[in-house]
Length: 184
Image 1 (cartoon, rainbow, N blue to C red):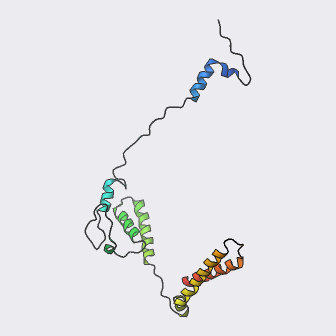
Image 2: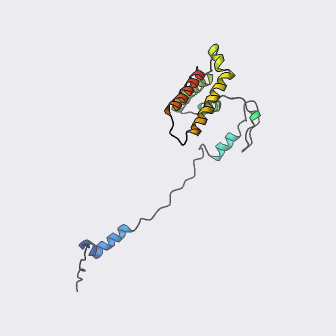
Image 3: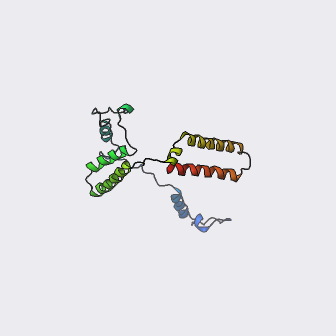
């Protein structure tokens, strides 16, 4: 009483008709159980830990006022000292430089601080002369304001038409001359 294999039909193979092949195929189809990801609490000294955030919010509002800020309150504009563009970043990196002990970090922060000092010290030279007076005059502003309005009107007029490259080229040249004169 041996079991005879079932007759093979079209497209069936001998391996698929064997009983052990079907159990292997069923095991291959069954997905592996999914394990829950391991959860760990964040390290205590992280930059966004509650203690660090609270300590940052308790720093003085500015050097002029010595009162600590309450958590969640914003600084008033009148209480702030006038700052340059890189003033806040400079103070932040200087604090990191003074508190770090890693020599590589200290050296890179020192280089960054020297660059920020250089950028803070940059000043635009005083412009003098006939051309400078013309560029700073009201006439120059009115002239180029007219060019801007003319360009906007031309763009609105030619939005649904084939545009003339010559007009666009003229506006580009006018804008280029303006920026060169302003930067001189």
